[in-house]
Length: 113
Image (cartoon, rainbow, N blue to C red):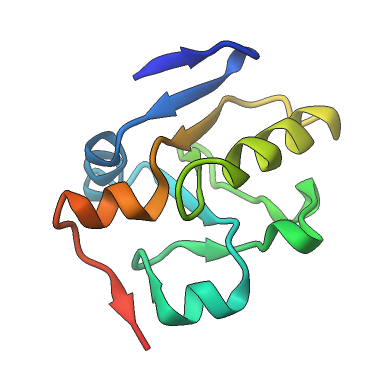
């Protein structure tokens, strides 16, 4: 886990870090890919909030949950994190480095179809 150079509010996590938080019940995972990408494969339980119509009102983690953004390779979730900060989101924002590609490279499960 490391700080993002854009500021301490956005922190990078590895796919393994995310998996551990999911297993521990503390993760609120948001997939910012587009619906057709999500339909092909997705992390079980992740909320789909496509970057194309993304806004902070769609992000509703419960108390005690960590907001974790992911995309395909880790780039679009950075755009989403910047947008959340610009819209006044005050909590910590986690980004999954490498996106679902790193998740799959680690042989972590995905739902398909």
